[in-house]
Image (cartoon, rainbow, N blue to C red; front, side, top):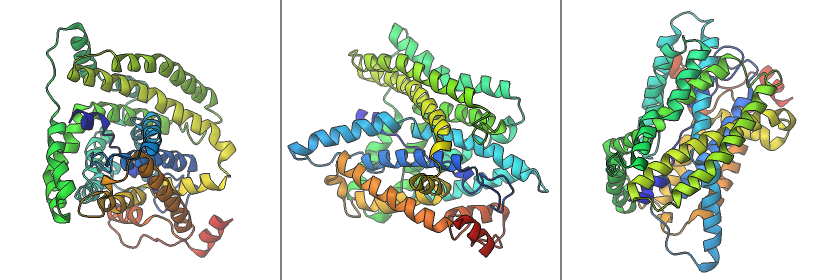
Length: 428
């Protein structure tokens, strides 16, 4: 089961920004900050491709492929994990903090408590996530909703305090202390993570159970699996740290005013590249050091987390720097629409691919290795981008984005379709 513990990369889309990254209130009529949508879209692409390789948390390898396919499977797996594992989720966590700051700015002009409204918004997200988790164990919306709650208090702190707290969280002191003890021989060998055992119990159900067997298993075992995974891998600390960084970035309008913050973004890009150049060789050294199994797992998990942060910094800052030159391209506009409808697209991916891979559906986990999984994922992403772009030319929000927003404000009168004037402006 150790390979399952290492391979799982569950992440989530930054749902709190969907339909909210605009310069005016909640009616969606303001000019959208499309760089946020597009950056979120890139992260959702990466996350989805990882999920296809993992057969949506059904961590069972395909039957032995023909010899000619093995190099392609290896290349697809290694490339996807190198580019996206531990990075895509980080982009979403960063976007969550940015979106929170935008929501505060938008809601501050409305009557009522913004904190209470945001907590209710997270409660609605929790409900959506729990229902989605009945189909796909790897759904993380419930954890996102719970961990987002402290932001209603933390946003009152100053930038320096937030960044200091973020730095401590991103270092992951408990894990760092444990790794130091393991390498020095002063700490006992860690036990097998609980989430490995829980996932072991789920795999036969995903392989041989019917639809309702999967739903019943995900009612509680699925919740335990993703909760223990988030805690035992240290992702909860990185998640909160990136929330706080995003809060500072959003508060200072770094993304939408990239030209004014060009030096900062270039510094982040250079720092990320330098950190990666130092950390990645150390990570590979740890992987080949012949450490005991559980010690190797803990060491490489922490090294991968640090490398992921460096790559994520390069990804985010580089994309924002390049975006002004690329935003007019049709594929990037479609990608921004894809990111704008992240909640709908994320849920749809599981609703389509879980039945394709699981035993109660087509059971394609038996035949589709990394290459075919990534190829099918890319084809579906292209389809989703096209549909999202078409949809948003006619409607203000994606279907689930509208449901979430309507539930947040407890009204069904929220307009979904564009007015003729707004539709004409979008077309232009």
